[in-house]
Length: 408
Image (tube, rainbow, N blue to C red; front, side):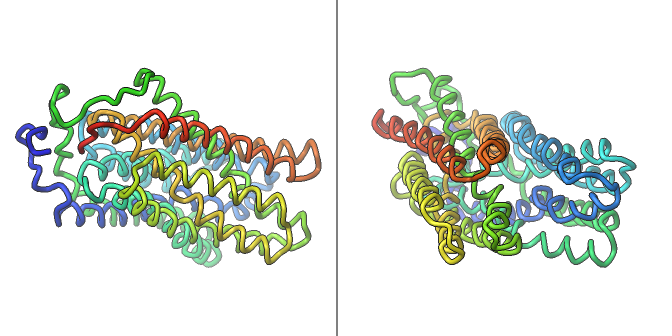
């Protein structure tokens, strides 16, 4: 390993500094991922203030936050490859501050939606680019490190909604947004100093001995395209329960509150799943981790199709969270195993972008199927079909062979 590092500082790999960097990354991701959860909490207040339909009120999230988050992962990942992670982190912090404060003064839904594009871009800096950066600082424990970094947005989902709800109910959503923007600036800027050290593996020569392209019988671009298709497919399947479980419970007569509880259970299960998948990835590699997660997600979707009792849905929702949480981080491990280190930021970011588009497509597709059939049963089968596509790609990768050398 040391011979291939070409004069960089290999002693920092898997070091105490690397673990400290990971801890700060988790805190930054938990704060920065507020952008993924804040609007779903203030949506009713926004709808009431502007006196608009529910579908119109969701636009700042669907075409704002999600679009900014998707594009941001690709753009900021490439920026990290060129200039190190500090550049996208600082840009992300500024975007969060400007986005939240700008949204607080939005006079109409158009401006509010544009502000949420900026918020989504800011939140993206804490996900794909951060995961790619952390992957450079670990070798023996890369799987668990990537999983911990990727858990930040799930921790944010558990922490931020009740905080946003409390301040929205007591002060209103606009002052709450100003407070969030100022907090992101005040809390994240000092933490960003930890990331001034440039990722050392970006200094490895392109023809260095640290990495050799695996021979799979397809080009690197074809392999990458397959990973993007896999990312879309797994998240189309994932979106069915995550996006529609609240509405599904309402249709079954259990009430939306029960569905919200099930969604919370999914996210909690997802935290354990992501961390657990990291341990698995360190033992068996990224492809096998993806294969296991994809298969277990298919099992959970099948259970949703077969059982719709209240107790069953609580249990299946927990299982779904425990099964699917490790799928998305596994793509970062696979990219580090099959592609050169200097391409990690952009490639991880683009695959994450594909998964976000998959979530958006899956959420819309499941709703369209429900409108056409009056039931979610076919939507569950549609999700299962997309899941099988993901499973097939993972199985092909496993059968095609593993990298002979994918060091750092």
